[in-house]
Image 1: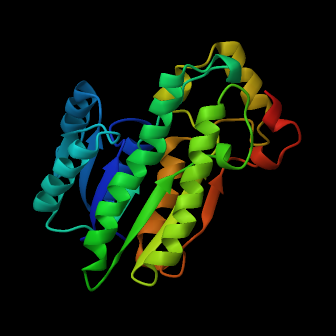
Image 2: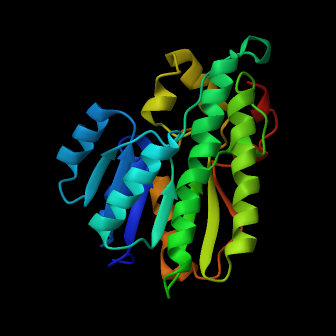
Amino acid sequence: MRLMGKRVIVTGGSTGIGAAVARRFLAEGAKVAVWCRNPSHANNIAVELPDLALVAAVDVADAEGVDRAFAQSLERLGGLDVLICNAGISIRHSFVDIPREDFDRVMRVNVHGVFYVSQLAARHMLKQEQGGAILMTASTSAVTAYRYYADYNASKGALVAMMRSMAIELAPKIRVNAVNPGYTMTPMQEAEYSAEMLDQVNGIIPMKRHARPEEIAALYVYLASDEAGYASGAVFTLDGAESVASGAAYL
């Protein structure tokens, strides 16, 4: 129960890593509000996790929607101690074929959305005596180039750069860190695979498998807890050694 009494917002919290974080944080004693864009996913997670303080259907790329969801979350939670910026999208294209609207959409969700929510959270946390923690789901794409994901790679690199700036400016009251998951078996990831592609990717990961969302969630528990009180401005990679394996970037 390392998060007993912590008040938490998880964006992108209805499926995959975000849903695993919400489940684990509830089990650790936190009070959790989940945000997601898809109303049907919102309904599903509300049924699965009835102890959630709030499930809000909101697109983090919509600044006005973020403002409304944030105010509603503060009211339900009674404050905010931890923000998990997990909402993100990826769209597979070769670089020369990326539609401009797809590039813009990826950047709005993965970068602008994190900025919108984090700025509101930081302003609130700075007023609190105990401060808080802001955690972001980045990706090994922030440091390792992957074919067909130039927009996604760029967005996650920008997110890490923003995290580092925030960590400097918001210290000592607010800790800011990023998690770089490697290949993780989320619905978004699974939808992009054929059986052959899955075997191929597993073959270049030294651990020979994808991460489970629950394994990523376990790291978030530590980073959100008081045990991580000196961790800020850091990137924590969980990828089964994939990003340091020869040839991993050339799929």
